Every structure is written in C-alpha cells, then in structure tokens.
Image 1 (cartoon, rainbow, N blue to C red):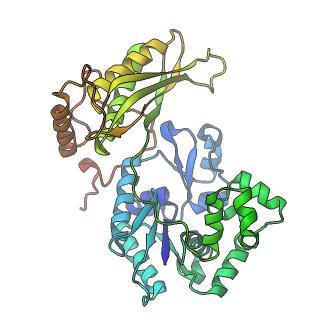
Image 2: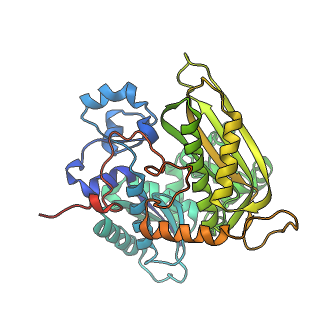
Image 3: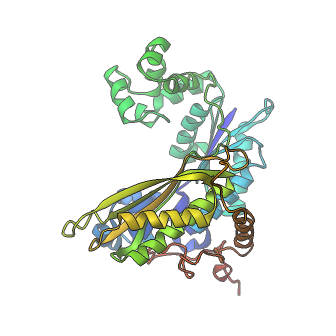
Length: 418
C-alpha cells in the first residue's frame, strides 16, 4: 500500500502554527520580492483572490476583505517541512519527499494493519508536534493514493482527513468521481487529446485499450493507466543527484551599475558551488544570465547570457565565482536597469571519479579550504564565511515588507513565554 500525505494550505498553516490569531482568517503568501500571490488559505480562495494575482493590483481587494498578506518566509517553511517529513519517517522507512508539503509513503509488510487508524495516527502526531494540519490518502498504488488524498481533502467531515481505497468498489467509485483534469500526471495537452476521445473522468481513461494508450502517448501515461487500475507501476523515486544546479533571483531593486550585479552573481555562484559540494559533484560549464525588468516597457530592454567551459571540473567557490563574474561583465550593458540574474552549473560529474588532465588542474589547496568554509558555515549558519567579492551583510536581499518572524530558525525570533 501507498500513502500520500499532503499538508493543508502549507504556507498559511506555518504562519498559523505560531500565530493562532490567524486561524480561520483569509491568508495570502507572496512570491519573492512581494510580487504576486503564490499561496492562499481556503478562506482567501472562497473570497475570490486568484492564484498569481499581482499584489499591487489586488491590494485594495485584500484590505476590503481583511486578507492577511505575508512575504514568503522560506527559512520557516523549509524547517517546518523538514519536521513533518522526519515525523513521517517514524511510520515507514520508505518515504519519497514529493514537494515541500507532500510525501509518498510505501508500506511493505503492513498487510494486517488498520490503515484508517494508521493514517489518523500520522495526522494526529504531525498536528500535535508541528501544528500543521494534513490529509492522508492510502491506496494500493501511488496514483490511487493521490485520488484518495483528494477525496480526504474534499470531504473532511466524512473522512476525518483520511481516506483508504482498499476495495474494488471504492476504487471504481473514486475514479468515476475524479475529473480527468484532476488526475495526477494529466496535463493540458494530454487532457485535450483524451477529451477528444470522450474521456471525462479517470474511470473513462482506464477504459481505453492499453495498445492505443501506449501508441498514442508515452510509457509514462501507460504506467499511469495501470496504476489507476490497481497494478502498481509507478514506484517510489530513489534520491538522485541533479544534472544541473541553478541559483536565479530577482533583485530587490533594479540595478544599473556593474558592481552591484557582480556582487549578486558572486553570491549566486557561491550558492551553486555549495550545492555541488553537498551532492558530491563538480561542474564542467557555467551558464550566466542577466535580464532587465520586462514589466517596465518605458525602459530599454536587454537580456543576455553566456556559457563558459572550464578546462577541468570543479566545485570550488573561488573558481566558479571568478568565472561567473567574468561572464556577467562581458554581457553587461551600460544604461540598462537590470532586475534578474542567475547562475547555472552544468556538465556535472562525480567529484571523486572524473577524468583528470595532465596539464590543467585545480589548485589542490581549494579542496581543504572549501571543506573548512562549509564546516564553519554549517556550525555558525547564516553564511558567516564569504568570498571577498560578496557583500558581507547579505546573502541575497529581497523586498520582504510583510515578513513574519523566523520562529524556528533564528534565535532572536523564538517565541518568549512570559
């Protein structure tokens, strides 16, 4: 059996966990630099606040409807997510973290368990230990557990937040209830083609012949069909190293001077290098991009990028930052107000197993130096050790005018009990 555990209105629930006054009130969470709405509580959805709404256009609407607006507090959300996932690992060792607010669990050797009770135990422990409400869907396959989770979320009073598909009757009933566009893995293009075949629900989809599905689509859609039929074909994903690592950000303000942009690029490059070392990889190529603010039509627009190939693979912050800064200097154009930049490292190979070059190689002092820097930053947090090309007072600065305290990741923001 598989379970999908999904946190309800996760970002809003994180805010409510430390500020009970927000319970049952409409909440909206904004994107980087307080741009647009990326998360809404059920109350905000009911009022009519759309996803992706630019906040400068909907500010008046939010004030009239008393919608509480918050900047994205990613340190808090990431830490709360980690706590939830750690709790789930107490129920089974086979956990696939699917996103920041949901995970798949596989239950091997649980044949005699009462899954309704087990699902409720998970919900209650997560709620008691973190304050985050969840819904649990349990079924014989991953795709069916997604369907079960939607039912648990849609009918909280009837299901108490847990729904188990453990019979053929329940499976058929659930698939007939599930709209085709709500099926996990059915995108707009596939939905349009299936709609032309008369498919309206998940049940209609599984009635299609296997041969037609495999010929008309890919192996992924065939596996999805078999999963919905109750034959497990979509397995838990094994953790894999990324094939490319990116750090891209919008600036808090537009920059037209090269010095500020160099500092940002250096910081982004250093972040990529740290991620490389964390997964034990080195890169062969560095891709740098720089773009102006496309929303400001009155200003001259400019977007450019450059790729540099390195003579040897590296995970050194010194080398990656140096090359990235050199790249951005070559594509920078005077008089342009830049709003966004990014660094992507590509051509990744294992650090401890790659082809060496007899004539060109990395300074051997870099490896121990990077190790010491990583250890110190892990010990003291907040990236105390930085390169000289970085601003010592910031990692990356965003406009966050509505930021809540970092209750669990900053000692100064820990709640004081008087």
